[in-house]
Length: 292
Image 1 (cartoon, one colour):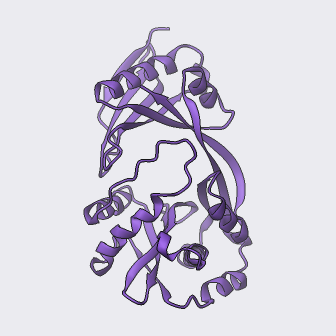
Image 2 (cartoon, helix red, strand yellow):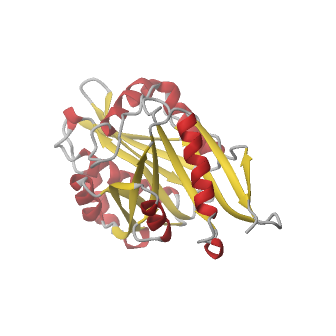
Image 3 (tube, one colour):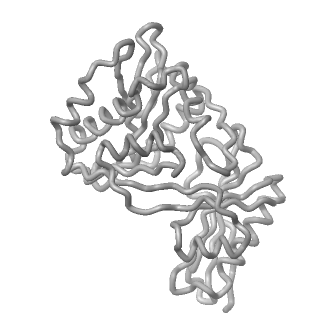
């Protein structure tokens, strides 16, 4: 088939790194596929994240290969050492990546909590249980100024999460970065809700959990991350914070249907928390990696 690949301006620029985009169209200028390549920064400047999609009716015509070749060549020209991509396990995209040399380095388990099935009394029991030395607080949107420094410092809680064979170089977080991330959510019309556990001895943040709610307050919200600093683990803070996040989501957004989360298959502690809170598995994804 006659195929044209057109570079595009990124329709959704992020606060850190750059994203390149390409559109594949046929002889009649009908779009048949897209590729997005995010060039990461903040300690991950050797990585590029690929999101490649081809219309189901147009697969097996070489479109994906053309898009992939262009994206990989660009990543190499930009000095990246690895390209990573995710696809549902066993899907056409998963098979496509495997056939082109991408190795599975991590498996994610996706789960969903149906809010209509949550028992408010059970949830309240978890939230109201005392955790000596800690208190919960929360905010919408950008972190308050008085908590900004300690919130940025708490992001290192994610640095040692189990990532199997994936290249998980820590992201460098500072106040500007956390504010920019919140601003990006706001600019696309969604709502960022953050719950944190505060160490009452010094007012520092010991752990956090983030939830992004669709702008219209309906459908499913997405958990963006939950982490507890190593020196504060073993006190049940992750379960406590996540239960409070669920409680607030139900109260603040009564039209929400559910909450979605994805957890690395090797992250047994977080999987146990999700299971105990009622999250039900929906599917798994493979993170695949190509060394350049």
